[in-house]
Image (tube, rainbow, N blue to C red):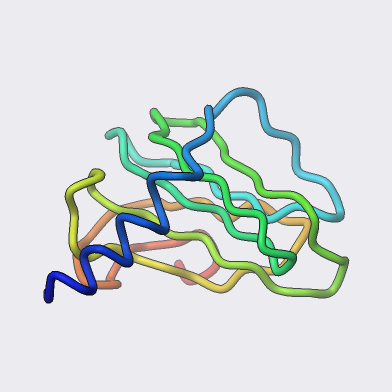
Length: 114
């Protein structure tokens, strides 16, 4: 990965770190939950531009708000903050996408494709 790509990834993740607190799925949210047994770095991004980033322990959920019903958001998972590659998935607004198993290079197992 080039230093420019690394700088872009860092800029995308670092300024928007959020706590994983109690997140509730609603009709205007993009949510991701880990159904795995390890802690990973997750990103939930609503079409409106709100982005949440947090390390989630097993069973925790992360949601970004501001999306309209019927639209699509993006959820992503990375092994940690230093990871160059991860997995991303387009998800419908208003539903929680579970990450079942993490595998490098966009080969993760998600609830909507298992």
